[in-house]
Amino acid sequence: MSMTDERLKSWLNANQVGRERMCLSVLAIDKRFSNVQPRHPEGGPDGGRDIVAVFEGEQTAFNTANDSREQKREINKKFQHDLVSALQAKQKPQVFIFLTNVGLTVGEKDNLVEQGKAKGLTYCEIFDRERIRIALDSADGFSIRFQYLNITLSEAEQASFFARWGDDIQSVISNGFQKLENTLDRILFYQEASTAISYLYVVLELDRTYTAEEIKHFRAFCNVILKEAKQNIWRLLFGSSDMSGRVLGQTGHQFTPQISGIKYGISSGQWECHINATEDSQGSRNPTFNLVGGLRSVGMESVTSIDLKYRPTDYQRLNPKLCVRDLDECTFDVILNRSLAEKVAAVRIFANEYKLQELSKSDFVIRGTRFDFKIPIQFTEDEISDPWVRISPADGATYFDMSFSDRTPRRLFSSIRL
Image 1 (tube, rainbow, N blue to C red):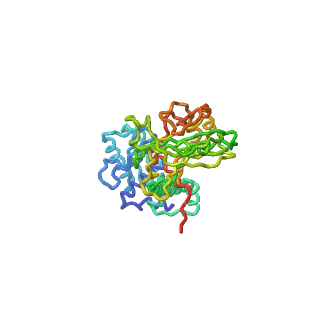
Image 2: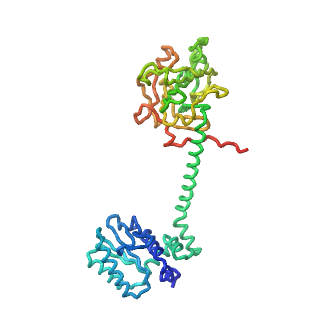
Image 3: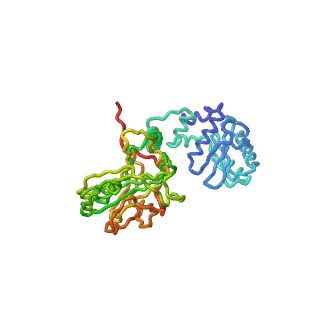
């Protein structure tokens, strides 16, 4: 006689809750049953129904467990009593499963099944001690056997158990650590997002490396609309174009005409639209942008990407500045000349140490729609012959959205521990 068979006889005699939970677990590993639940897991009157389950996806099953050491004739009485109690329920069962730790012959089990069908059941099944033992001595039942009967696994059983469940266990562990890591990443991001923006970059990655002669004139700007005005700032506009003196030269500084083309120089600018500086009550239709920074730089012989930069210029922060978290739920789009737009393969957005968003080619489309405001610098008619277009969402929305609730920005590097 196996240890499992021996312990099924009497190990749980004084533990009704343990008996019912073991039987529930045995049913749960049987693929025919689903939504297996105890009726009164801590004991109490249950109307002859210890367990409720769904049998083969359709029929309701009421199951009872009995671990008595009485004679087999007592089992017959117990079966009849629990069956009558179950059939008196408001929701009359179509299936009845009876579990017992007593060993029954095939004829005895058939007799009980016939009694059940005579009462109008669609299906009746008996789990006697041998049937339960077989379930517990299988790879699916080893953990149930160990938990309720305190039977350790042999080396062969351990090998069988891990062959059956090893990958699933590893997956649970890995997923658990991944969830923990994701949670810590979110906590760290929200903590660091309270710091002021040191830089906000939008990188337009091109589909290949282009020569300066292939790019020639270019212009590209990112338009950001905050969900809520912060520090009296409502919108941001920042970007770059060719000619190193274009931005500063058109805003009061001396501007010497230059050769057009990215090869000969780049001019960058950043503007803020303040909530009290709009030209009319319709707000977003005609915003007024105030230049808050500009930069001249040398040109490029070869081009793999175009960088659009918003970078507060204060060496010391004497006044409050926008924080990274202020970008949550903002909307944005990219405005640029068509020939450049057709070369863009991806759009990546960075702020401080984080990548906030990444858009692949499938995420956006090029739209030549009418703009509701003007870029606050001038371009020649020849330059404008390469028309303005927008990089907009492929799903038809007007703007892209940035939600830190939907996506946790990724930190680009780890801090050095001193």
